[in-house]
Length: 298
Image (cartoon, rainbow, N blue to C red; front, side):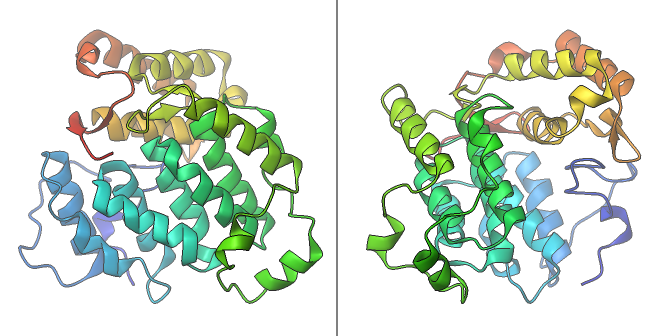
């Protein structure tokens, strides 16, 4: 499926994020028929606080369509979806083929909800790809622990049980008893221990980021610290941080990247502007927002 010209780079977090390559005003189709039209309408309405079109994205999360569209739809649901919408992400993690798991895990991580972690871990267990293991593992880490933790370090390791791996080859969903099998790798042990620890600290409706209730101001400080240290410190983590901040407050952070590489000077200018001009005190710690609109969905 061809991406409309003005949407090229949208939903890419090293490019235009939730914005477009130019600022020309565009009208969306009242009754869109095609996936990118539907995505664009849902995104633009969500920016105004109207989340009623999230469910129109469901049918476009499919191997029939270009994977960029599927991932864009999952991202938007993770960022702006309500409880019913988020159940779709749980279902994808629990049942969908390998190619959907990384995108669904990222969507789950962006909610910050600890309740996603067991489902994400089961998806990690049934994955047969090192890349997918890493994507899911890093998404789990973004909910539970600071960047660079052991959970992230061990995220791409494989489940060592050969009988279990054999059952995963055909991508069939494991029986419930096996999906709840005892942890067998260092990664699983670390995740289970941290999950139990956090579950005792925070109620289920608190959105977490790297193990603490999500704080916009704390995230901005972390991003500024990395930008001050240069490109090397921004690599790897800044894309997820940009995604999280942009989706929350609705500021265009595209100039934090240049040619898909972190841009320290551009990032610092943006972050300083946000600190000076945005009303950050209205963002309650541990609460989800999309473009400044609170989401009450847990």
